[in-house]
Image (cartoon, rainbow over all chains, first blue to last red; front, side, top):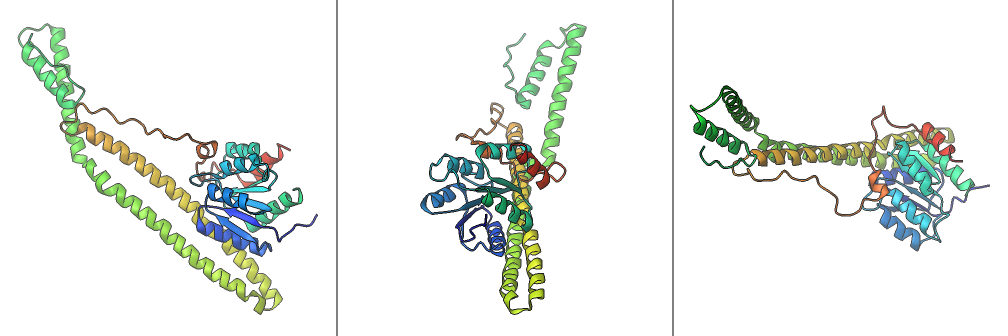
Length: 128
Length: 201
C-alpha cells in the first residue's frame, strides 16, 4: 500500500531546533505539509481543528506531555485511530510500556537517524 | 535544683542548658552524673565547633552567588548551542536549495551529507534536557543549603525544618514518567525498544 505523502503531519516538540530538524527530515522524505506545536495542549487544539494523517510527538513537554496528548487523542472519537509516533529521549522500559498501553503506533528514541524515522513512518502508515 | 528552661533544639539553647545544668549541680554529683555532665559539656563544645565550621564554610555564598552563577552559565550554554545549531541548520537549508543546480551524483552526496548534519544537530535537544536536569539538581541543593543556613543563624532556634515541596496539582502519568535522557549505560537502544514493542503484538 502506497503512502499518501500529501497528508498533513503534526510535529510536536518544545525545542524549536528539534521541530526544525524533524521538519527538514520529513521534507527529505517528501512530506511537505507539516505543521508544528510546542506542547500537548497546542497540539490537541490543532488536531481537533484540522485534518491530520500523522502525529509525531516528543514526550517531555509542559504543561501537557506527549503521553497525556496520546491519551487525549485515543479518547477522542474523531482522532482515536490517528497514527501517533513518539520521538523522545525517554528510553526506560516503563516509558515504552506506558506509551504502548496508551496506544502509541511506534516509538523512536532520541538521538535518532533519518532511516529510523523513514522506517517507522512507513510501518505506521502502511498498517494504518 | 534551680529552675531550668528546656532547650528548643537550637545549638545555642542546648549549650545554654548544659551550662545551666553544670552550674546548678556542681559539688553535689555522683560519678555517673559527673560523667554524664562531662559528656553533655563535650556535646556543647562539639555543637559550638560545628557552628564555627559552618560559618567558616560561608554557606551564604553558595546561594547568594555560586548557584545563581552556575545556573546562569548553564542557561548561556543552552542559548549558545541553540544559536550555533540554528546557524548550522541555516547553512544546511541553503545547501539543500542548491541541490537541484548540481549534477545528480553530487546532489545525492550533498543530500546524504546534509541528512547526517541534521541527525547530528539533535544533540542540542539532548544536551538541553541534560542541562535542565543539572539545573534542577542545583536548585534542590540551594533549597537545602537555605534550610541549613536558617537553622544555624541566630534567632532561628524555633524555626521548623522546611517541608519537602509537594506539587499542588495532581501529577499525570506522562509527567511522572518524564525523566529526560538516561545516561548511556542505562539507556535502551532503538533495537531494544523495537523488541519490547514487538512483544506486545
